[in-house]
Image 1 (spheres, rainbow, N blue to C red):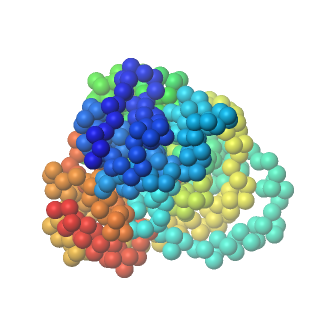
Image 2 (image 1 turned 120 degrees about the vertical axis):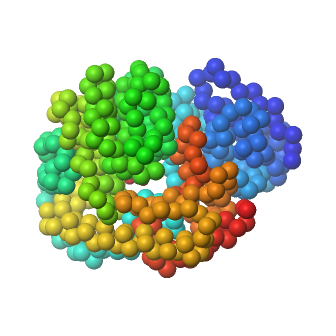
Image 3 (image 1 turned 30 degrees about the vertical axis):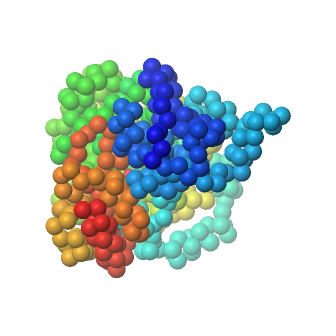
Length: 491
Ligand SMILES: Cc1ncc(COP(=O)(O)O)c(C=O)c1O
């Protein structure tokens, strides 16, 4: 192990610590101060040494790994790359008359900040649909033949309205179908005018925070919580304050005591991500009361409420809002498929024009054919049928996962059935390192996500997210077997 660099991190700087660490290690590699093949310390040790969070170190290392400066795997030995990418080698030659290309250095401050926010699974190289990746629906059971038939019919007869520049708020028949669905199934109070079709809920989160908050403003985020929301907020220059969630989700009183100045709260009240709590009525009323009193905003991310297997689903928080403070977001990623990139938001009437203008500046409008296809899928009743089938299927797959974990792992992992959602949490014994387990599991060919990856400050019992919706019982059993091996190897 090399004695690692004397790190010079400036806590007062506006440049995030993660970016500073990335810059230091990268320039040490380029200047030769860290030699090819040298082992770099484990994220945990480096974080402790430098007095910064392990997530910060892991984020910087992830980026260096993705860009080819480091190789190996975070957690199981990381090394300076033996052969650096060609252009970097060229950049090291001092005599070059051409100004050096500094990919990170040439970015704006905002660009560097954006590039350093860890979010995309694809960037982290885990875009595969391998068990137990959470949040992916049953692609094997998607009615592809029907979808293809509708698509072919649509393409043959596509009216010009679908092929030309469309409305920034989305294709009208789809907005009408979404409004009808949300009113009936989710108790959302809206007209089609208030529905804006987005590129998944990610775009909705991004628009909401940029239109409603200014850089430097504060938002409450659930801890543990969804990285996509936290990332979008940080990208907009928002200070995110983690509010711990309990078995009833986020508590507005706790939020007010931690960050009374907050202008927005982002919540998943139907099914807290990732722990699964449903927010009861009293907490919902408290949150709405806070938003009304403080003229603050609530972003309700209703990402997978369709999948509930027992008990009655609580209608959306938006339906209780009489002050126009809730922005509701939903997605077709879970109920159809994620690559469709169609989601929606419902905004208070007086905000529609502003949101639509901003949306047009980002990417004009959603894709015409996909919207028309989704509209037909809903209008012809296929959507409702597909949902019913998937609900029954996911309940079975959850049972298959519980059975496989019981027989392959037994006491090594504590799991309880869940009434909703697409993943379970497997609790490890206290003191276990869930990110090390996730790393070992990845080496054994099974994809589990450590709960600690979703927490900011929350001191959680270590656990693993185990997605089951996308996998057949056979794939689930095989993955459980591999997970058992990985768990044994870290004992
Ligand atoms: C909490 C949460 N919100 C939203 C989404 C959906 O994101 P999108 O609609 O951009 O695919 C996900 C998907 O993983 C999620 O877990």
